[in-house]
Length: 453
Image (cartoon, rainbow, N blue to C red; front, side, top):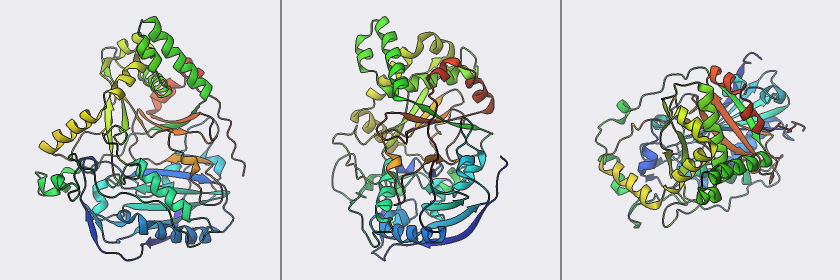
């Protein structure tokens, strides 16, 4: 359908109760993300039991209460300046748009879904002037979209979901004035493990630049992309895992066969089939990159309540397109597993030390026209996010950080099923070629979800 008009009906600033001003310096992990886009996630809900105006009022009050605990979200600066600058809530209306238009069966994610997300095109460095967190509540004909833009230099996805769940705990109308029991940790990680003021060793004064703004180049608008949400059932994932294991056993690699996971099997299929769909030169190298959490890999591990960034992008070894096809899924799955296994406490600390010796905020982006990049995780229960009128009907993302070959993983809405929903973004010609790949579509499961409400 053509892009419908989405008009903003109201805009308001939300601030927590006053508190002493505090400044939290950023780590290497945080600073490296200054050139990247804001994170954009959103949910589609059935109609709430109140009017949209009442809904906005209720979510605003709950958000203010959540911000009293997660106060860095209202700050801004190269460090987080917790001065209660505030976050924003937008109330928008999408005339004539129904849930079925947003989640059409067996079709692309409509381009107009991007208009359900605020701060489109903003990069994290602009958090000097822009809010670090903005909510857009878009009224649909038979439901509502709640979309977020979150400054990625403030925290990673794990910390964002913790904050969102704290907000949702407070939001139910039957519990006005409720408070969250969550206790986030704002002190930033230090490699020496000491209790010194957070990251004195990474204070902005150490950066060899007088003005970071000159290094932050806003990316050009991305070329046209097609996006699809695809379901991989637990049974399909088990079959992919079994196939990879059999190939490795046939090659005599019993140890790797025993260690194969569903993530490795799914990643190898996506890498293998997207590379083939691109029809790139057989001698051109390709890689599979993915974002990985440092939290569990560090020794000692970071607490689950750590509120900041603790992620790195890691990559398989480069391999020629023809060699990847010849080696098969088993080898590709083992390459992914080998890359994950190498991401140890020692490797993380070595990367931090290298950055500290030569700090920069102009790190290359994840994008690689000949690679596949996998982000998000099906281990986060995004469908457990409930404002008090039922769990989401669907999860979507905005245009931020999208490029040809970007893949995001989410659990399915069917709690406990083991199914995984995969968002794939590709150039139109590459998506068209992937749609003609019978091997790929044999693994994709029909999506039986219905938007009944």
